[in-house]
Length: 255
Image 1 (spheres, rainbow, N blue to C red):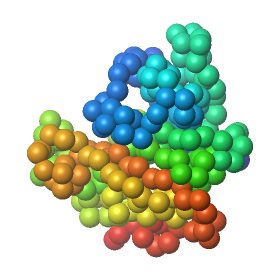
Image 2: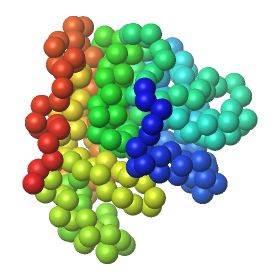
Image 3: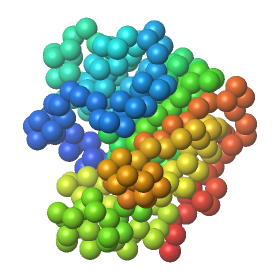
Image 4: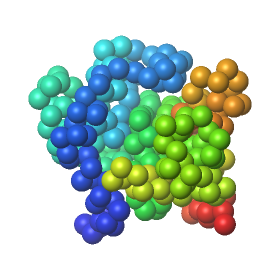
């Protein structure tokens, strides 16, 4: 892994070393989508690699329901504080695009709170997905959430209090994916199709996606949700797709 960081990635990492970030991520609870997915796919005694774990929000709550969990985050500030608060948890500094764990070593891999969307450039995102597939046991799940590009259409109800931001970025909704600069962070937004394509390219199989549940219609929820939870599983045999480059549907931005 190169020691030279793109300036955009350096900006993202710096944002997670601030007191404001510590305050924002010091809420220890599960979100509704997480409650649904964790109860459906996780069982006590199974192992979970909690990547981009931040201050240990999901690490703690997974531990409390009986899972064997290890949390990893690139922010040394977050990990130091989390260790002070939760000394009984296995929390380590590390990067999700270079995971220092053996092949097929965890039943599940989790990236919560859209953490993968702050990988930059796009090649680092793909490297993170490959590492998730490598460390996941056959039959296990990768669950992660990612910002929904289609929610950037100007009529999305979730951005009604961010009118100028919504107008400035609504044209991006017609792309397949892209990075948007907001709040000091370079953030990935992708269509559901491109996110599934990226992840299946590393050898994982799509299982389901879940958007917000506020509009009363699953199809609309998945289209308008500002972010979507995705579930993938690792087949017994990973084919050539897990070794190659991403096809055009994953790599190329729509013009």
